Length: 121
Length: 121
DNA sequence: CGGAATCCATAACGATACTG
DNA sequence: CAGTATCGTTATGGATTCCG
Image (cartoon, rainbow over all chains, first blue to last red; front, side):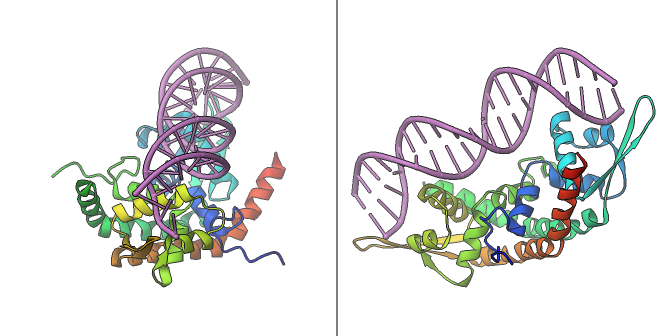
């Protein structure tokens, strides 16, 4: 038994690792894009406006490494590569949805608070 | 009516702003620390191992600006400053909890997937 | 005590060019 | 088509010093 690692600052803490994964600019977007089924690399790129090839590759690799996305290569010429959420990947959508719902419900208040705060300066 | 801004890449998208807020290294920790009641600046610093004064100040300012934390200055010498979650701040704990629970439930699998992926190289 | 200001190292990200 | 490699910029966080 190692230490109980509930401290999100600890790199080994599950919640910290979660936040590191979804905190970046693209992961949530990619998971959302793949929610309805498999897509080819280029199709994902087209759907996510502004993503670079580098970041798409990099983020997909990370998700694949974590077992959240599965990569399937069809050995044709030109190559065809499809990505789809694994079962684990699909379950991730639940907490993400909770976050989206919180944002939808509270973000107007937050933005109002910001305006007020900024004016008070 | 402005554009519908559901695209998380869009800086104006509520979900994107949420992720920007909780994606940093300290916000979630601070919110968790304040969950049980108000704390002084120094007390928060002591409870969160490894945080610098700069990041504590900076993160608290952000949370205050967003109306999620309230700052109370007691004009004494030396000064005493207390921080506590607002009602909105407390509601944020729900989606955070969803994330923690996902992490607790799936992180072992994710870590196993990583080992397997890394070995396959 | 609770900051603010400054400097610095690193990591994240984007743009571009090249490849099987 | 689906990458890889390289480079430059910007964002982020830590250490230090100073202040009311």
